[in-house]
Length: 417
Ligand code: LLP
Image (cartoon, rainbow, N blue to C red; front, side):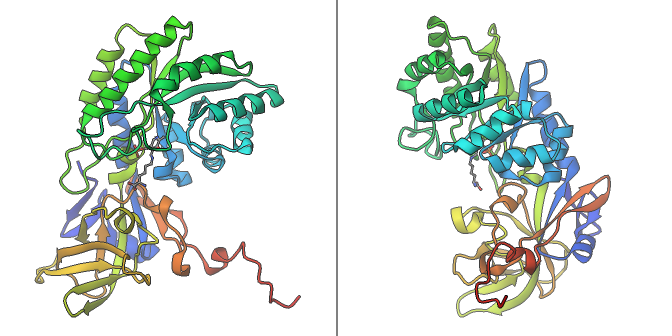
């Protein structure tokens, strides 16, 4: 069920009219539904119920402190990729013992921070990282819990959209080398080998590659057992897609059922790292039309949100539905919805049939994941405000940047002392 629905011809976030939110907090503004967040978390929890599991929300999708806190209260763990993300989890009251640390470029300082905090596991992506982690842990007099992120090299031909599980990318440890790397890990004095991990890509709409990857991992788990290496958990990664336009996202119950069957008889806890599927459709980007402009061949709706707020259309040519906040009887016209940034790639949607007027509000849908987290101050545009609707109450969870904040770290060398 959608948490963004029309009531009296006005788009609402859980019955709170977006018109009221725009009035109170201004635009552009991300608006999230707390119920939608809880619901998507519950769909994982329910699907994997009865199986020892931990849902680690991938922070990169949306790392607002209030969103983290919301998931922490629901019992989530977190998947982080930087020391900064770890600090966010801690600042939001999350439990480091439920944190898995992914990423190909962990620095020594980040390793120390994570060891100090006591993370659940390091998802190690190379032999050199393994050696470095062993050293850092040793110098601190600690032991580091590790998983290896294995690259299962699942068939690209049948699933061409998988971008991170193939041989020719920077992620993970090559499948053929994994067994040897595990032996090395087991031999290192300051490491505890606890699990195995993979993540094969994002916005997957087909379960097959996810399950193929799992099969490959389990084969390895058995080989490792022969080597005397017993694992405690298996991390199936993230990647479950959502509906942006007409995609059919994978059915979580079917996914969980398949995982359950494949793991039957094994004592492996299941970890997962979903990002997009927990937050993507729980948020919209609210924006106001500044100008209508009739170009020579196209009509433009120039809005107050731009590529610096939502990069996905510019960066990936990604589709986001764009809908009017107030439904009118005015005629629809074909428009490109574009922002004020000085780049031709600054668009939120192209060739949209929309009844638009200057001053009207639009909602860019499915903006809860990889929206705010990928935003920037390009063109010295303030990063947008963020609002969380909870129990019928819209609350500001991020203030719009002020000019002072945008230049706070800059040194004005010409300023007289
Ligand atoms: N785990 C790891 C190791 C990852 O690299 C990612 C995403 C996730 C989990 C979460 O994946 P998800 O469940 O959200 O698919 N900026 C792009 C998406 C990049 C995803 C990077 N890794 C976008 O806007 O589509």
